[in-house]
View 1 (tube, rainbow, N blue to C red):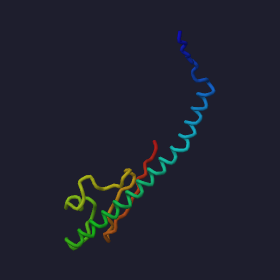
View 2 (cartoon, rainbow, N blue to C red; view 1 turned 60 degrees about the horizontal axis):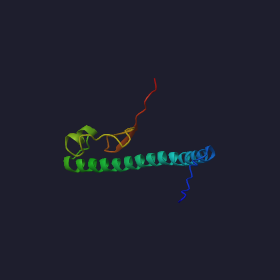
View 3 (cartoon, one colour; view 1 turned 90 degrees about the vertical axis):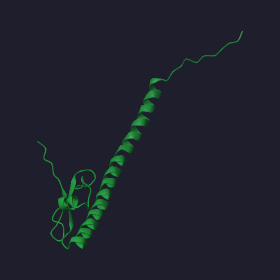
View 4 (cartoon, rainbow, N blue to C red; view 1 turned 90 degrees about the horizontal axis):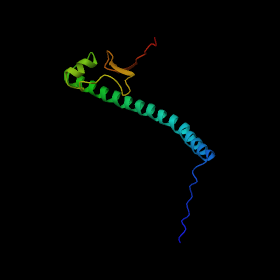
Length: 112
């Protein structure tokens, strides 16, 4: 007769607590890094978008002989897409100064 060895021993409470501790430490390390990189990506995206809008302002000035008065004018003339106006992340808006310079304005929301 063959004898089959069965080991029905599961994980102990200590082993489960060690696993949970390791997972918790990994989460504590990774979450701040993820948020830092997300903010960095939004900043770089906004800088690139601002340069693109500045290039479109210059193209507008070369063709029309004047600077656009607003972002809406660039959009209506077809220099920017319909949904243009803000940076990635939605907290920074762009506007055009009187000398054709693209200006960043940060929206401040008040908590009520």
